[in-house]
Length: 239
Length: 301
Ligand SMILES: Nc1ncnc2c1ncn2[C@@H]1O[C@H](COP(=O)(O)OP(=O)(O)OP(=O)(O)O)[C@@H](O)[C@H]1O
Ligand SMILES: [Mg+2]
Image (cartoon, rainbow over all chains, first blue to last red; front, side, top):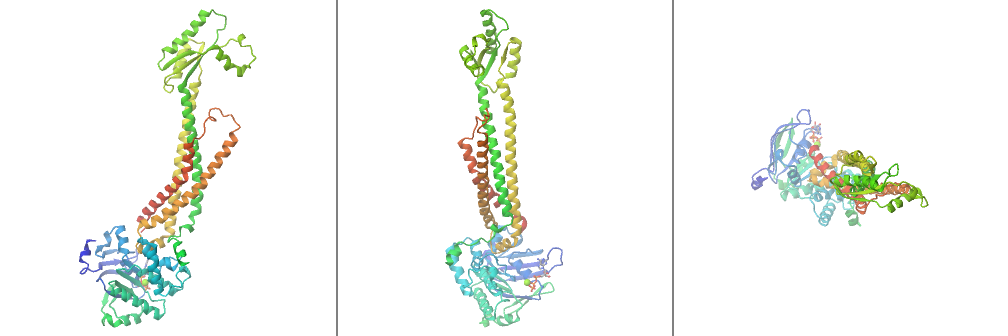
């Protein structure tokens, strides 16, 4: 990862002629070119089945492109060692569309996972997790087992888990689909704040409301391809 | 209260609830039981063999039958002298000594009774031959050669049949070694199978952990820890079963005079090794689990 020296000029995620296919199915996305600047904020849009989740999985290194080159943090993912991949993933926060919480664990333990995998001490973990969980208004449900939480509660746990590490890249797949409007905007505010602190954010969403209100540029998927729809207004109008 | 709950957190991989656990616990306990028994067999045969070897080293006894009719004392001395001379000429012989008549009588009393009139019996003469190395001494050839020179004398074939016994005991020892290796491989395969199954079951959780930045080592450590405890406690059960079985066997056989075999028993070092099996098993289970996870994850995702 020697490319770190060029961090200001080099895109944090870079795709060149990337294609995705599952097994022998036809390609879901073909010849994608995409460069995301460090500190940028994008919505990811497209019809259901257009490949939003697939594109995000590639960015969080769970899916390898079937063709083309993918660079994340300046390193070619195709050649990265397993250990290096783990280190890269620690700098990426992910909110899954279907949450993918560890259902047998408490909300607290779920949010603690990204900190525990990097070996942080339990005292520090406790401080951070409690603070964040009360921020997403889950302090009462902290010790509830995840399988007993409501959809909206799970979503907030998933988001808390994604941001607990103050990631350099935040990838969120429909992060506000299951929560009430006021919580949705509170969560969006969290993403905006993180972005201000330098986190690169990509949020997949169907919500035209959200897109209209924040008006960040969109990565729009259509017909296996991709186009960027630029922001109409400046980001600061969001507040 | 919250803190307490958080400290005693559940692990990310719910390995305790694995369906394969029961299979693994039972198979480990049985493997350890069989392993312990085979190890005892190995120790026993080794001990028996070396005690037999030692008794060969001692030497051999030569029996000179009394003449069928009265002969002169000079002739008698000649007969014995011929045999003594023969043995003294053999390489590997250190010393030849005539066993005193008094001692022969003493040896005979258990068979004939203290009141038997030994004077009236024609007693054989006995020679004690001390060997420098009983293991290399060729008993059979010495016996054959002796027969030609002095047909009335014979080697007490103690050494010959001991050598045959040692041979069969040695194959018993090899057999128990083979069983040891067999049981060990079955145990290792069971662990590999159980860990492999568990990894498939928890594939989803492992994938999530990976995306959260967990290394393969992080996952493997959870399996290794679990492997250590399952290995230790199941083996403890197996070892206790083995100790119990040994007690029963030794109790049942305590009434029997098993002669040569009864003379051997397990020493302190043997019991120590047996008692250490759970620890050995726990470490084996831990290491096997760890590397199985590392290897499988590399193949799997
Ligand atoms: N694991 C998979 N195996 C096979 N096909 C898959 C897999 N995941 C996704 N697909 C296919 O890839 C295409 C794109 O799916 P994807 O989930 O990326 O769409 P999406 O844009 O996220 O849709 P939605 O808005 O409904 O979440 C779909 O046709 C889907 O059937
Ligand atoms: Mg999707």
